[in-house]
Image (tube, rainbow, N blue to C red; front, side, top):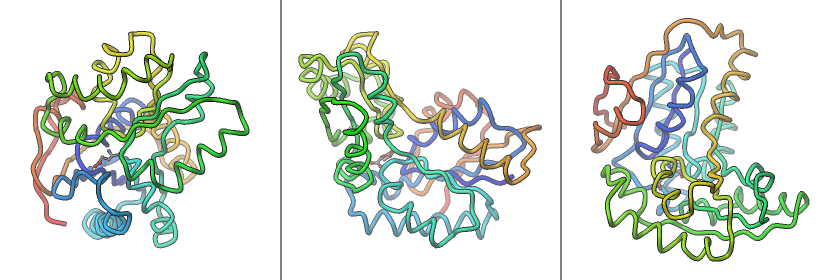
Length: 261
Ligand code: DGL
């Protein structure tokens, strides 16, 4: 099976990393749209146009049968459009794990870290409204402006990244938040910093494993045989930090190249 996966940059590789653990017998074509990153500070129209262009590219160039939108921001802006325009594709999007967070929290206080665009989008608002019917919880939302750029630069352990996160997370810690939704696929890359601030027992909710399992279920319905090698190639539209790719995928033999989309 040929699978296209994209994000604005390195973040979606956290999803690829989860896929690597369960999915076999496929070619993965990953697009890091770094020329247009960060998506989270763009308008929904601008994001939708990029999603459309990237999907067309993956279809024409690689003949993909499945597409994973490994980005909460892009899913919020474009998944409905993509489902309508490409109904023949297996399509999996990414949504903040609000429901698992509500179920995991003992203090009924959860924090949500995401991009400004995701927090403003209807998809996120719908998820939060749905949750009101499950359990009474207090939600503390934080748009993490500038965090994606820090991660793209590979500045995981820098003082600046720590201080940014500390400013956003300390108020949550003071309110007894015990569960944090990582509502952007880049943020699992700073999980160790978040734990340093919130304490090691904080529940961090990410969605890479759920997406990988969904791909497995949907592809097996299309008769995919989950055996053999998984080949991964990475294509970036602007610039990319190679060391971060190796760090995330724990593999030095990934084909990485620049492409124009
Ligand atoms: N990784 C993306 C997400 O999950 C967006 C990052 C960006 O702002 O470009 O939302």
